[in-house]
Figure 1 (cartoon, rainbow, N blue to C red):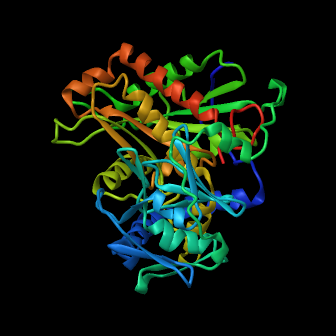
Figure 2 (figure 1 turned 90 degrees about the horizontal axis):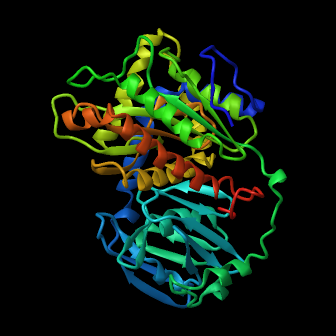
Length: 442
């Protein structure tokens, strides 16, 4: 395996006509997304279901009232309460799987704001979480997601604070303990099929050192340039992945050149083709005038939920000002609904969040700063990359201690090693159902 640099020329992305059209609309509608998606999140938070303090589950003849807790600031209930509706839950490594035997399945992870229902992935306003050994589910899952995805089984009435089971024969007490044997649950789904290594497609890792050329990125107090740190770390990640069987690595840039933000994702999509791949954009963070802020965080493409996420998105998108008027025009308003719908239906959002969580988990073992967690925002560089994609903020260059850390080649190697480990662990489950790439991920 050889790390390959991509020529910073304008290229036409590959793929079907539908995907090309989607990329075009996403690029044109980026500025509308940055405004509309936060408004959508705000509306979901304001929905009556999110403010409930109790919930009634019924099948027309029987009813159970469940008290809702707010240990994380939003209404949630223990997963075991869904046993009265026939759901069974088990834990498989860091993934939780809920099954309504013979009918439906849900898949999610604690701390990740997505749930898989059937073949679709749905973004949640609030994430499932663990409180001790107890798994809690946001009430949105019952009041919004299940009735929407399984309308033949559930109907919700937010005004009455109730969820009705339309098929009473499914009523039961099917909750199994989190430590139920994974092997037994896997047998329910049928035997796994082993594949020879030759059947596994080549996996592709595309590394994008942020900024470059006339765009230095942010500057530290000692005039350290973000573009230099990003390139050094990206080269170190490529070196760590060197020699991995069945893996191919590309660099968007391996010298000090400026590649337009919109083209980076397009280049990555063209190189990946139909193979499983990931896109990692490497950056350093900054909060001018606040030298004490430190730590690392990893972003995926979605609406910004906080002022900090919006600030980082604006900071990383500022490079567009150096690229002229291209892409400045927004999408026609009538296309916005279609863009939002397609963005949610693509499963890359869920996998991007999963990849970001794995990177955070690995990097925390070598980074002395604070683990700031998985973040999300409308980041231009990720918009056109049709694959799991993340933007890694390796530290705050505005913090004097972290600026020195970010200049240290030893830290670059340590950081790169952990990111590489996260990528390889991610590929054990992605893409789901592909022989030779690990267990099915759903």
